[in-house]
Length: 133
Ligand code: THU
Image 1 (cartoon, rainbow, N blue to C red):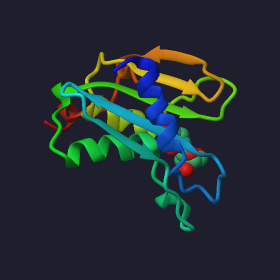
Image 2 (image 1 turned 90 degrees about the vertical axis):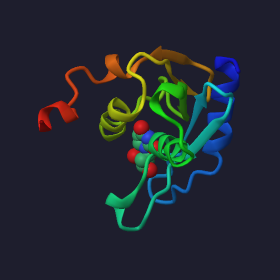
Image 3 (image 1 turned 30 degrees about the horizontal axis):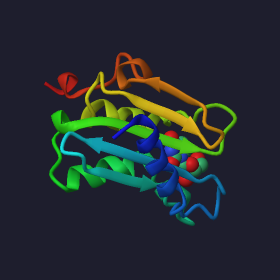
Image 4 (image 1 turned 45 degrees about the horizontal axis):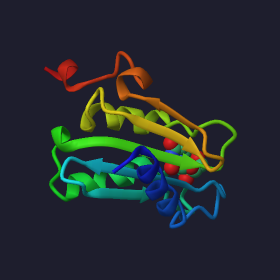
């Protein structure tokens, strides 16, 4: 699957966003080595802190289907932003634990801008399980 196709899947997932409070719809798509794609959109709640981001929904969907970190190939996310949409801090922390540190993350927007990065770049000096030993 190409980068463009993965971003397209994120755009499709974005259409399933439940975001009546922020009116900010986000979509994400995670590609696995075997070709499977797990998607997510943001799902909000009237109790605001319970809102869940698109990236984490896609990542947790992959985890719940038994996908190991080593089997994850790339993640795309998209929103209707001026610049390519960047993952929030909470998602960065979760990605730093569950997603390969040097796998491509395609940040994008609906206009077609794409910026490629990695979780190592997005969250250097991440808190990790090492600190808990
Ligand atoms: N949101 C995401 O889904 N991903 C991000 O990385 C940024 C924020 C969602 C959370 C909330 O539903 C809405 O966008 C506004 O913050």
